[in-house]
Image (cartoon, rainbow, N blue to C red):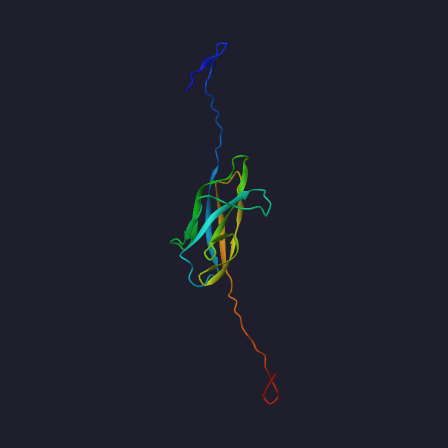
Length: 173
């Protein structure tokens, strides 16, 4: 530590100058609910989900960024609902106060990638994934997101051979 000095005018000149920058962020809670539509068969014991975000006003094809530390295994609770609440999520980018758009994505266990839309396989069944997005506003303290899996009807291959019969019932080619 260097001692303060005295200027020619007799005023004290501090040896160390400290500048404080207020980087306070607005934390919000994001409640996630997983819904199953037309689900048949056994559902998995848990599914992997995480949050992604991008800046509000971004182009529709702008990339989403994973929110660090939000990977969780979502399970069914005692009431039969699949829910989790993420707390302390940033409402906006503190560098310029641009609010975020959030979505929840699901882990596709077959390829290890996360998806917000498209089709994934869980057990013996395929599901179409749909994830809603939510733009955070200054009034938001808590928001909700829903991730819906709708079972895709199975597709079967059927080989058919056409044969003709004449009026006597004899097979013709």
